[in-house]
Amino acid sequence: MTVTDPATRRGWTVLVVTTFGSLLIFSNSTATNVALPAISADLEVAAATADWILLSFMLTLSMSVLIVSRISDMVGRRRIYLAGLAVLVVSSVGGAFAGNAVVLAALRGVQGVAAAIIITGATAVISDVFPAHRLAGALSINIMMASVAGMLGPLVGALLLQSFGWRSLFLVNVPFGVIALVLAATVLPEDRRRPSAGESLDVPGAVLSAVGLACLLLAVNRSSAWGVTDPRVLGLGAVALAVLGAFVIVERRAARPLVDLGLVADRNRALAYGTAFLMALPQAASLVLVVLYQQTVLGASSIEAGVAATVAAAALVVTSPVAGVLARFLTPRSVSSAGCALAAVGYLLLGLSMTGTGTGPLFHIGLVLVGAGNGIFMAPNTASIVRGLPVDRRGIANGIRSLMFNSAQTLGAATALLLAAAGLAGAGVGGYDGVAADPSGALWGFHVAAAVLVGCALAATVTSLRRSGAWLVTPTEPITTAAAPAPSPAPRGEDR
Figure 1 (spheres, rainbow, N blue to C red):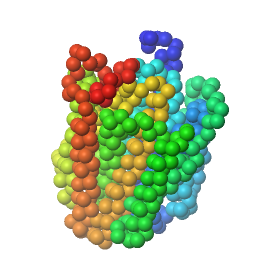
Figure 2 (tube, rainbow, N blue to C red):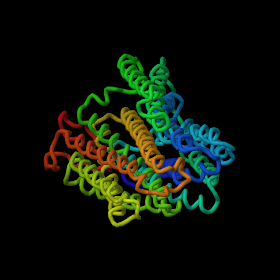
Figure 3 (spheres, one colour):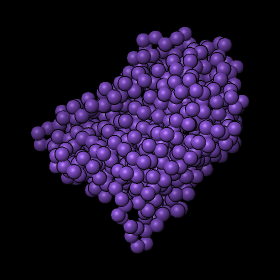
Figure 4 (tube, helix red, strand yellow):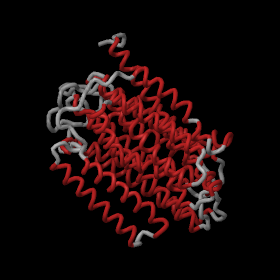
């Protein structure tokens, strides 16, 4: 199949359209980070309440990603994807005119559901239109562009905030959302698949997964307002563990489970999933931390805070293709592990640079290494998850990866907000609209958060290294890049 084949051209057209939808979701998701101080001041809310303007989006996204993924299998990819874009446009109009923080947080929650539909729908549609030997490459492009959009979001948000106010961050979704809707309605293939007899949604699994994730995030967030040892926080944490444990048991026994647990039975694939989770957690947290540090400790403008995120985004874009080149000589295990280690060094330098006196070379070098580490890591690790799977299970595999990615980002952002808010409260700053008069009093929260990021990246390095297999590609092993994974199942024990 050549790039001039109609089927290939159609696949790349679908990829462009669905990636446009992903860009819209991820840029808007992180653009709100820099607007949090302005929203807090305008709506007159404390930090603990303002947090939910960010967290409600990530919470509902994580809660619904498995459910909408399953529903898309049942009712059709195209239908559910178009519905997600429509919900995004309508909720964005509502968010632009929200009169209080509760309404805005609720509408952000609706946007999170729309985001889950768009993200999982994009993955499913791409999986349907691309042949097996091009699928991982197409998914890697979609994931890379989404990550870049997430990193550029703070800068876009800062520019809109400075020019038109925070409500423009929601209004801008409307024209771009309508364009995405029209393009998707024109390009996406018609749904031909119909539900099989007896096919149904795993309702118990859906409820347990949503409740468990909600309790876990709520416990992390409320610990800043109630205290880590508060019985309510401990109770929520205990409920989360119990419910998620029950979810695993239910999924093992379900005839048509929400999650195919057999996908993580393979040790190497399970380690790849774990590594993806550990790398996603500090990626979101670092954006929150960097933006808040510059605005609340250094007193920087929203644009200055947003520009910092572009450093990491540029490094990610530049280094992502390097992963494909390295994969010609090194196995996914080697390339992914190198990316994790680079990111760990980057987070360490960011933490060391947070002295309250400005941003020096360590700060910017740290951002470059964070972007480079994530750029090198993503493609080979994603390819190792789908490698060796039949085509009809790759969409499910990516659905699990998406859940772990979004859950990790939600927990990472919540943890960063918790620690930063605790540090700011110690310096006498009760919200994100103020600047610490004594920066040294607020720094401990940022330093502890940076240490958590380093720990996550180091743990990701360990889980990546623990995968079995060779370090170098040998003549007897098929050369596998993110763009061209081996079409046949990998022998047991081969590096993934």
